[in-house]
Length: 366
Ligand code: SF4
Ligand code: SF4
Image (cartoon, rainbow, N blue to C red; front, side, top):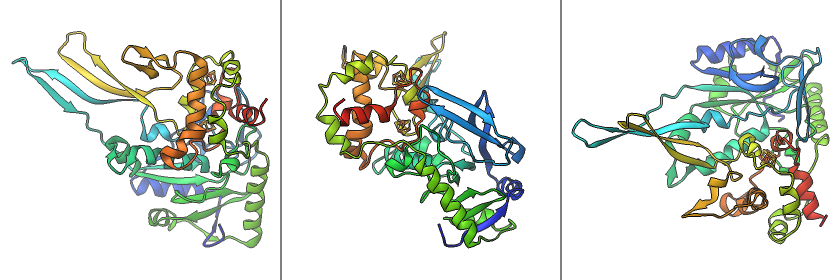
């Protein structure tokens, strides 16, 4: 990031939000809710998590107020931007019984707003591109996803600190955003470096009071981001696909299953998981039924139910499915690993199962 990088004083963030609103965007930004950082509608910089950092480790997540004036020193909370494009639960169509006894089917129509998301991390942008590969496949585009996705304007925040659970440097997805954003921000002590990659991004920043960033400011940004990369844990350097498929009968799967609760938290917080199920919700009077789609998990018993048989009846097979899909067969399906190193599945696993520890143990034959 060396060409056309500008400097914005921190107070200018409010003008950025105001510009977005005047251009018709609903502004979504990070904020503290229920002791975690989540994304929701934001109109004022006072709502941003100023001075907040997170402390994360396997099975642990908590916030701390440092008293400093940084808006973006936190790392990912439980919620990615996935729910903005792929809803946890959504009606797809409904069926109504007409007075003449015929059934009338109606597609659920959605109205989509222009949305700008502030503070998106490099790993979550990479995850969004993975979701695109799934939902915007050439021959079979999901209209709900497509309509929401095309109205998203992304304002990235490069990570200047990593949580102890992060490993995006290992998957090649962070901590600096290289693609997929409209505007990127890198927060320094007294301002933000601003870079744009799209015309829409240019349009948003053109009213801001910017000046060209100095060489010292660019060097400060590089040094902070490099430091964030150095703070991370890492994946084994092996070919994980071949390694995992050579371990399908390993005793370690059962050892993991003795700890794993099959709760599905890891798949709920994962920004790349896309599995879902569809269900009918009939009204009590039997006149109407709503067909809904909701997030599902390879850890649920029903997920592998096919014609009277549950294929993965034991937890060890569900964990194996999750790991071998994410780090193995995803390469065949989508041309890359299905993990972007956000670390959420580590922090939000109630028993602290750590995907990097498991992969390292399999790779090293432990
Ligand atoms: S597998 Fe874990 S670390 Fe990788 S993208 Fe999903 S939640 Fe993040
Ligand atoms: S690995 Fe952890 S989060 Fe995932 S299903 Fe097992 S206990 Fe739940």
